[in-house]
Image 1 (cartoon, one colour):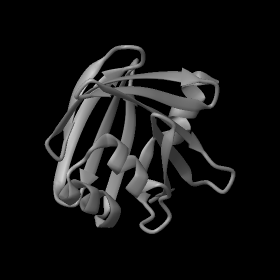
Image 2 (image 1 turned 60 degrees about the vertical axis):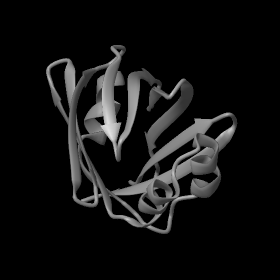
Image 3 (image 1 turned 90 degrees about the horizontal axis):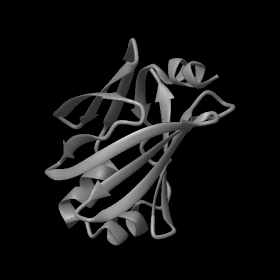
Image 4 (image 1 turned 90 degrees about the vertical axis):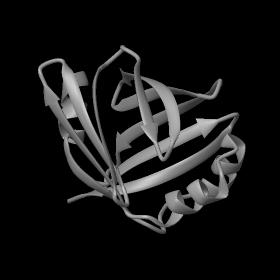
Length: 138
């Protein structure tokens, strides 16, 4: 089951702009600059996931900014998006990919899963404040 959910999440996904929920409150709780907040709310975003043995390759695209990360489940790795550095660790919990992200001493938790309608949902939480993103496979 664990590998199966990652296999199902593999492929290219596009954020459905306008379907996100809770972004303002989440960005405020993270103390993100106004320009980063606006970019996250209005800019086309893509996500691509593939597997190579026990490693995963994630390619994130926010506007023209493209980043590639290779990681293994359970092992921390650094990332940087829009000038914001974090340390991330992913694990599987049932049919969800759960991430722990440390940014400037703050910890956020992400939960990514497939919805019954074929979309992929990613929920990020800090201090009880949740942002929800909906992605469609392309």
